[in-house]
Image 1 (cartoon, chains in turn blue, cyan):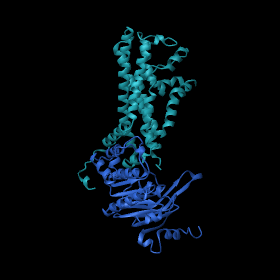
Image 2 (tube, chains in turn yellow, green; image 1 turned 180 degrees about the vertical axis):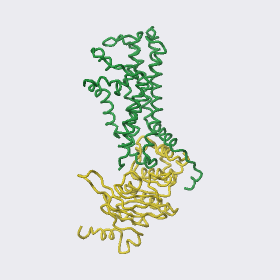
Image 3 (tube, helix red, strand yellow; image 1 turned 90 degrees about the vertical axis):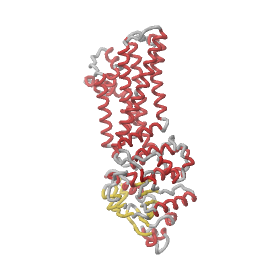
Image 4 (cartoon, helix red, strand yellow; image 1 turned 90 degrees about the horizontal axis):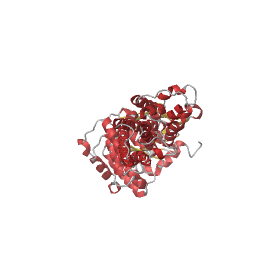
Length: 238
Length: 275
């Protein structure tokens, strides 16, 4: 469903160029939760933003169902994404925030109540975004992404700042979405936590692919963390 | 989550405009706009109540053509207020990072700017109508309180009020377009305000620039409202001033600047990576 091919991104001009992503290729299949893993600064966010058309690749392609994001006939109805921790106007209520984007996507207002219920945010829907906790914001983010009932979900570090209860809720939530046959791609830099959440992994380091495959296969010689350290040689010579 | 099978999607342009209208009405921005418009119209009323003949230095009174025109022109000097409100159309999206969701829902970024310009054109028009109604009513009330009749025939007063409406609408759009180009509200405000209140006056000191003054933003604004301190000051200094554009031409020139800024924004800042 998601196909990344020879993706490359260089930020800045010649003198101060930084290569964030280099020759990156991988696929993400439907019906499973795929973890997009790597340390901070590995290029995860840049890659996700290239898949979503927010960052223009220097080279290579990223497609969703054979199309670039910007060419999707109904982008928000195909892909739901959460990239920022808080992408809300502080003075707008949760419900009004969703009503704005429901209109943008062409969805009826009844859908706003549905997604609020879905993520368990109905009780604070009347509140302005400025007063929300991290967990509340994350649920509102998810609600926004789900407005178009998308087949593909892309979440950048969704468990960041969540308490254990929130993480457990998120794990169940993503599991349900994957079991409905959706494609779920979740980035994380916390390998131990991701291990409990994902079926497949795509591991990158310094902008390059380290390994990809089913979790059981990748971790057959130890935990995800041990595997990662062995593969990147972080334990041995760098 | 299969409840959406009956969902019908409305056409994109309408959807984006409708979303912008909701965006505008769901924060306090509309309230600030209403207050700004009421205050601008109220200022004309207040100055008319005081009476220009009581200003320091004294100015032509309400009963003279010059006095009435000057009072309406004062409202035109406050056109930077709707421009400032207009800048937030795009800059607030960057500031609060809503731009990410916005471009996810509408990856063709030009359509987002087009929708914002359309909705803010209507909002600017509403702003201008409120200014004109309050200012017009204020003049009539002040004149009757002072026991004089306005120095201009009603048709002329209405004409100036219509020009004010156009001025407020176009300046709102200037704000939107420059906000899109510069992406930062403070920068947009400094650039717009700095130019109109200082930059253009300085520019006029360069020999020869005088000749193109009617086509510069400030000169076109003067043509639109039929009032400017600069033009009056220059004419009093004895330097020959070029004739100002007619109101419709002045409005068109200003809309041209809106179009140039919007196209520049489309070609530059709108294409930038959203990181």
